[in-house]
Length: 162
Image 1 (cartoon, rainbow, N blue to C red):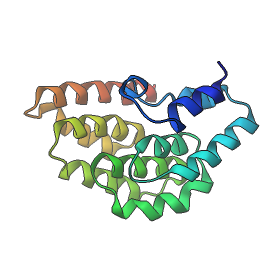
Image 2 (spheres, one colour; image 1 turned 30 degrees about the vertical axis):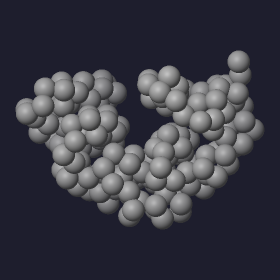
Image 3 (cartoon, rainbow, N blue to C red; image 1 turned 90 degrees about the vertical axis):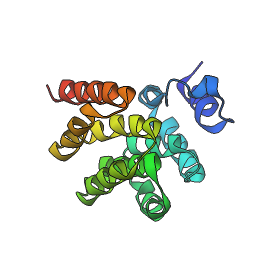
């Protein structure tokens, strides 16, 4: 099956646990032609919202300058993991330093361990000392899953740097 066809199944068709359990297959975009990527970007722009973080993550992965305005528009209404994902997508597009603070503040306010775990991996992708410091703070979190995932996120961040 072609990459664009898989994109339609994973990003545009109704989401199911089976499709979503391993996270967004962003590598599909690397296997698309330039024309397919452009069509995919337009489709993502059409559906991006606060209801689903996958289009947000994909637009950030694509470094879509077309998405910048809509992402900044929805950012104030976002909370938790979605706020961090939007901040990361915008960071990938434009490296606005304020986005790091937005992501850090969202992670400090988060009480759900499961949301916090997902945030850890997004924070690691910023690759800046401030997010690394925040991840280090969570190494000793009271929830073992959070501390374990903080260690994994820190490993990813440092491995990427090498």
